[in-house]
Structures are given as structure tokens and as C-alpha cells.
Image (cartoon, rainbow, N blue to C red; front, side):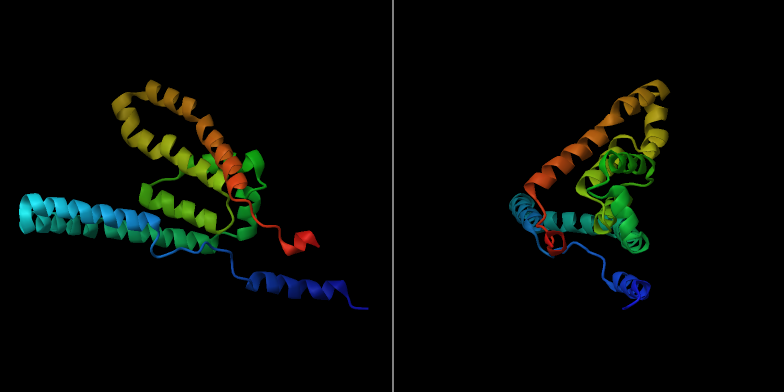
Length: 203
């Protein structure tokens, strides 16, 4: 008879050697095609009104803007990539996965509320969480919480301009919205995109 304990190290090594599940990203999707079509139509309208000089002026301005934004985009994408490698898939799945229930939505809401930085940080982090096991509901709760409750904008902009009372009441009223949005997103996604049953579950 074989010793069951002798199989544990091998199974653990096999589990660690398996690649983490990730989402396959298409280089050109429907959104890229729509944006490219809108850009072509807009460029044609500008060329018809202002000629080649007008188009070149817009291109020059956009290239300088792109040069200023590119470092932040690169830093945000690198942050998301590093987070997806650092975070343990099993723990993220338990804390923010489809079976995390209300706790996962609350964790996502809390994480979004304290997440610093702008969209160049928030969206790569959200993408990394999806890649390592978080479900749509918890990730939606995180993004909505970052948008509505994020302390960075409240401290830097809202309190100085709108005042403390307004900011506190606005945050208090917004608290349940990320949880509700995450629950609705989880409910709709599970029914619109059901996952096929795994072979291990069938046996």
C-alpha cells in the first residue's frame, strides 16, 4: 500500500506549477474598431473644414498629450502585472471570488475606498484582481467604491471646496451603493455568462 502522505508534496508541486488562469485579451476588439471608425470620421470632418494644417495641429497636440500620459499608463499597467503575480490566487478566490458572498463585496468596497491614485492605478489593479480570482461582483464593488467613496479625491478636492458636512453626508449616503452594484453585477453575470460544469464536479 502506498503512503498517502508521500503524494502530498507531489500534488502541492503540481498545483504550484500550474499556470494561473488569466483572461485572453484580443489585440483588436469591437471597442477598438468603433473608436478607430470615429477617429477616421472626425479626422475627415476636420480635414474638410480646416485642411491638412488643422489635422496636423490636432495630431501634434495629441502626441504631446500622449507623451505626458504614457509614463503613468505604463506605471499603472506594470503595477497591475506585478500585483497579479504577487497575490496568491487561492486567497483572492476565497476573499473576493464568486463564493465569497457579502464578505467579498464588503472587502471590495473597503479596498476601493482606500485605493489611492487615479484611473491609471485603479483600473490596472481591478484587472489584476480579476486575473487572480476575484469575480465581477467584488471587482465592480471595488471600482464603484473607488469612484464614489475614494478618500483621495474627498480629502484633496471635496472637503476644501464643498465642506466637511457635505462630504461626510455624501460618503455616508454612497456607502451601500458599491455593495448593491456588486451584488447586481454578480447576479446578472452569473445568469448571462454561466460557467460550464467542470469534469471533476461531474465525477
